[in-house]
Length: 331
Image (cartoon, rainbow, N blue to C red):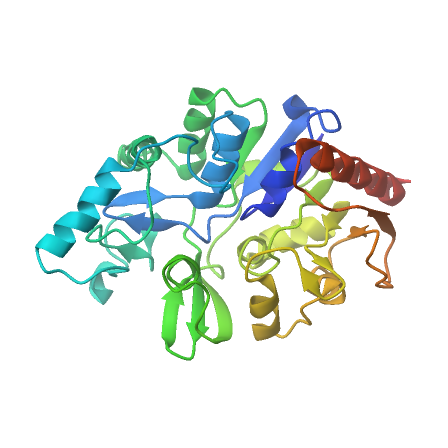
């Protein structure tokens, strides 16, 4: 048995070729929910859905989000209608007093659907509406995710990191905003001053998550701050990682990041934007998988390989390096 921590595209790209190395039936994936938002009344869980769609065989693997071949009729009409009505574009937050009203899981991240700032496909939207309706019927996010996994015929077990709200808030020189506004609407342009995982002090990992964390853990080359940080911001989650073997793939080659805003965000929270900084951000990691061109000298065991993740064959190669690193830790 093994457990993967997934956020953004790093870990999903690793999972895409991991089947020959890590039996899906014996694999659990814990998804980040700090990036979730409530958009037009429905809960969007981007990191859970990337794994859901990947494992269900429908992921758009050109963009690594959304459903392959999906249409966007509703999204386009929302934008067109807003323009015709003379309404400002998004992102449009609901009023402050509404941010902690309604379903608790959406606290601090409620957006209007007017001029919808995130592109939501039509089939993708059906997933969000089903999820939200099941939540409103009384199911937990864990229970809803299990039902959706069944609908997409997943072999791997997919779990949200918590059934409690944790929102990734980026504090910038132009004000504080949810991560999705920073990344999707503003293209990571504002200067980042700090990152807050709002609600993490009161959130707890579920019993299912804590059970999964008793198994060896693999962290793919995801963003250490906003993809993995919301999980480790919960005391119970971080303490569980301290008690189990953990291997991580660096999203850097020395000081060069593969993709995304990881370098900017790591610098903002006081970590060197590099492989060495990742090791500092991950004190609970027992061994690292680094690129063969990465000469960083760490104080923990290292397995080196080509960590490029462009094809399933690449992913299988990196997965085998993760298996080797787990063997070093267990051995």
